[in-house]
Image (tube, rainbow, N blue to C red; front, side, top):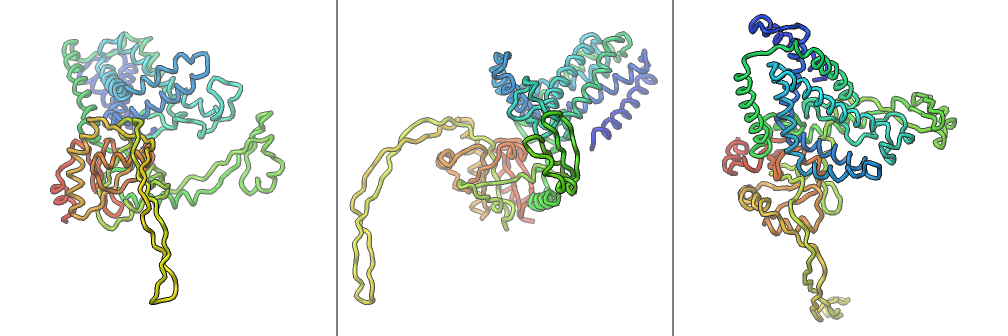
Length: 495
């Protein structure tokens, strides 16, 4: 679905709600105001709901924003603000739930006309906040990677590749909007926001104050519980991400890679570094005159044709072993069912330590073979010497280790006893860390490393469990909702 299609649906819903207010409740004062209340209220309720089904996704997006703000303010007159953002990042999920619930409740308050003064000012401030976020992200498209945002003299022509945050997250994973589109959307919403302040007396009010207060109190509590259930106790009840149940990852990845391979250069964009003059040339024309545009004087950018199918995060699915070799076949091309464990991060602390290593020294003896010509070299142990070497020992958080010992290991042991392969992908871990983890959990399985953002996209649980067969996702579970292996086998593996 596109933003235009969504706005059409919201507009139609707003018409229906406006007619309800006029002819059923008979509480409208100004038809334009009533329609705007219904339109904006319905838009906020919907945009909040698609984020409420996946509050972790919004939290991850906020972490991106906080990291970008921290880097932007460092080394400037506003550097004193930078330390605030790592702190906010630590509480990103709480901030996410608060913002989601506030957005939905504010939308309902607009629909009901509850507390007009508070609601209208809160709406203006919230839209202003969203406009600041999307505007900042959009403007970073003019800022090269080696230039600080506040170094305005270093700004160049707009490039999407300059942006660190490429999607505002306004509608979660339901619709991906480019920051430029999101910014224009929020600027447009400032119009009704200002109108609400100006004509506050024209807002319709439904029900009485007591009924509205009671309804909003129950709604707020219900939304908090609903948001928490979608990450603390279970997976999001609606999965808008590409790695949903039933998707054939192997086939989809192959199709996306083929589509990207067919992409060609559609145009060269040449910008004079001194005058700012811009020239656009087709590939054929550029090859004829490229010598006239030396890179010392011209900045050269290429535009490509659109791939034949939408490209998703599936195309970035890549599992690596310790040596950096791809091991995708462990999961995507396995000829039997695979239990795919996912941990985008291992929760533990590295503690400097030491360990005793035994070095065995050998003496080589040459022995003549009498039955056949030639010699054989045998090694005899000369001595065994012990030495101490420094290492890092990892101490895992008790709550995290408990998840594996009490939930994951019994399931894995049963699956392995039944002949299934078990593969675990871990984000941001080195060989030493993974080896310590394997020893402490007792999980004798295959281990791989992967991009942590990819792993967060696949499943919103740490650890998360995915059952796959021939590259297809059969099901996914939050670790708190993992059924016994016998139930999984009966449902998926005995058909």
